[in-house]
Length: 323
Image (cartoon, rainbow, N blue to C red; front, side):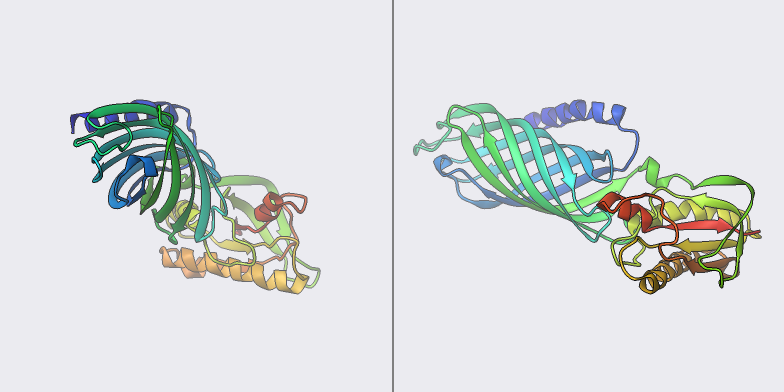
């Protein structure tokens, strides 16, 4: 247990620079348990019971940095006790979807205490081996709507660069809790417009006079989707506070779509997105009479081009003050 406490202290020291240099995103902690499939030369029993805890920072919506501390007491010929510490970089795909796969690469340190009697397993019996490690993993985050909790599963290959060069496999499942995200919890920015402007999606539509626009950085939607994502809900919480503090404020929820699909379909999709955001605001306590929802299809492009990032930026919603 003393060794484990030392490793936890070392983990805190290693993670300190992450806190100092990360400016945006969520912190998270992710405890997990799992299955250990050892290198055959260890002569250990494959078993459940390994545990680890990750503590990390979301550097962007696609990239994480995290530290890991793990412990495993394994039966075998003879048994071994493993203490592990490491740091990893993670690339997450589809970050705003319910299912977000990721890949991981990391380095670390493994201490293996080997017991008795000696049946020929590696490292040798009655010894302690310390070695550098390299890890590669694939995983999946199941991100619940409007919740800081996620389910995290991972299959990891870990190679220990000792005298024997042993490679183990770890299958882990656990939960991930995100907290303290500065960029996600911040209030919306209200951008003043020098003069009232008019906005309509066609000559036949009613012209809406916009006094100010509440702009967001993360109110995006998945492709062909009107689901308000967890990132968007956290940003909208700031708008709720502004509107509750200004009960006479009239706001239009304006929805948009990217350039794919027909004009008619994109108009319908953007309307559904606007309706979904309006419903969330009403559910959060904003007066429904102060809110209107309107879809504008792909009549406005924030980002040009047809690459994935540009298309994603155009699948958005903005809130417009109309009085």
